[in-house]
Length: 199
Image (cartoon, rainbow, N blue to C red; front, side, top):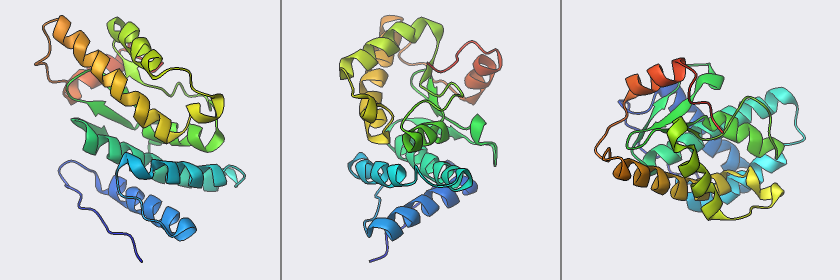
């Protein structure tokens, strides 16, 4: 049975991201016979597929990482008020930007690390304002100790994301900034200044 193709809003998802999302779903379906459904429930299936790519050639791993990163980023965008920053072909610059708190990450970087099972360099991680680093650390700590083998899985990243977002929103509330909307211009200015590197 072929996977169901979800709807994509062209105003919210760049066409090249859509193409890669669909490629990811096709790769996993061809390998497993199971369809990804843009929910966290099927992320362990994607993680299993990515682990199987670990021994592949670098160009294959990068092709899969870009597709899996697009899929994971779109899954997150559908779960939280957030948006894509995804210059076509410039995967190191991709990020999902959250609208209700200052939080961003590079989904292709996360997929690369899921494939390799470890840090691949490039400073991939959740990026926040300097004032919010303690909230990020508290959110990560709330998840508890994670075995090294599980740390880089996309299914772990999505589980960690909930407590991180909750802590950042609580920080905004404590500062009286809960109604702030973090738009693309805020991210451009902050990240161009280099003050909010992922941690």
